[in-house]
Amino acid sequence: MMWLLRTLVAAGLLLAPGSRQAITVMGATSLTAYARAVIEPWARAHANVQVALSGGGSYAGWYAMKAGQADIALCDLRFDPGTAFYERGLGKMPVLFIANPSDGIRNVSRSSLRRVFHGQIKNWRELGGRNQLVRMVVRPVGSGARAVVAQSLGVSADGPAQVVQLSNGAVVRAVQETPGAIGYVEGDHAWPGVIALKVNGQSYQAKPGKWPFYAWPRIYWPVRASSAVTSLAHALSQSPRRSSFGLITGVNPP
Image 1: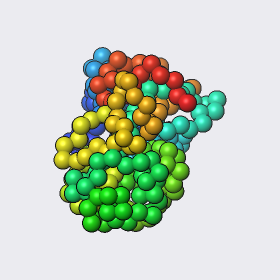
Image 2 (image 1 turned 90 degrees about the vertical axis):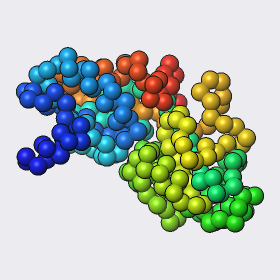
Image 3 (image 1 turned 120 degrees about the horizontal axis):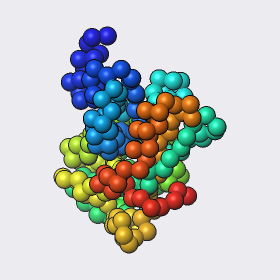
Image 4 (image 1 turned 30 degrees about the horizontal axis):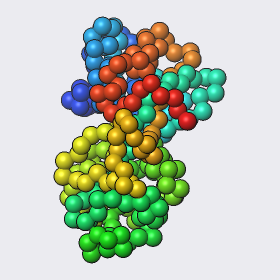
């Protein structure tokens, strides 16, 4: 157990050490930076509580919470809370498609994007780009981001041969370093070294704009949770810092 404690401390995942009550927050890696920004000041104000934060994906967070191994689940897709769990929306988060500059592509139609991720387009010259094989960089099957893309484009989450990366940052790095690569990331960042693709001639804009690809992040926690868990869940669901992390508030999920 000591090696695990040292590892978590080194990774910055344990906050307010030496506390009496432990809270575990787990789920979508796209939400961990936001969650950490909320947890740190909350933990300083609750010195008797220790918070462990980890990613692993929406499915991992949801099922860990259902099994009693996590107290709060961070998810970028919806699960059915039934009567045992609370559900709170965090807003919406754009999903952007990024490409390696060597692809020679700046704009793609939605139907062509579907064909790319379905494996029907294998070379960028088929879309007017360079003679470069298409290399797909995706998130794991258990990732909410992957499920959002699969649902939005009407393609299988499994798809053809792909390079799998565990986080937005890892996807960006892989696309940067791989000629012919295309991938997707959540958030409104201007990622360096990659091209943010237009879809049907439209670039992502928060206001105005009709960007068609969004995740709708949520948090879940048990109805019978402790007062500390409930307090932290409320802080996560209501923090005004959401907009600083690519979350668009004041909108209702579809």
